[in-house]
Length: 250
Image (tube, helix red, strand yellow):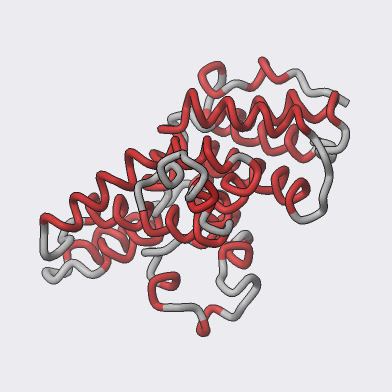
């Protein structure tokens, strides 16, 4: 049953209604094999990457991961979905890289709590004590989805690598990039290449990444690289074919 998508676009309602309506509607999304019915949902999820609300972008990333997992792991064919995702990567690929960098809330919270003067910890405690009902709801939702973000998948939190526990490496980001690189390798490479090259230049020009704003950019680059490697290093496929070694000069 199709949803009235225009009724809950982010700019037409307050954030509570927008978030709730998007969650409810995307829960009704059919499997990718139902091409005609799933495409409005897929297009809407891709459009949400341009939202100014982080929870909506997180919802978009989760929806896209779910759809592509069905295509990649469960072999559900949907050429129209793959074409739509490929076109989105070519036209709006920067929204993907922007989301990967911005979606490091755990890292930002830990960085704030480790303020040597204690001011960051005091500020964080004050935020928790003064949370509104709506903010508490979002916190509960975040906790309930924690298991989906663990590495190895579903693993115990104590067994996670240090970078994952501290939010410096978000596993779901790498998984999303791996899925995208599997169904649309060249388009994914083209979308990620500018940010990866910039991150490499930044890393080579400075000894220490000191600020959180710098760390999230480097973290996003590491996650994207991990996703590309997990997809089988798709840039290597062009090597030896006269294409100059694929999308990257390696």
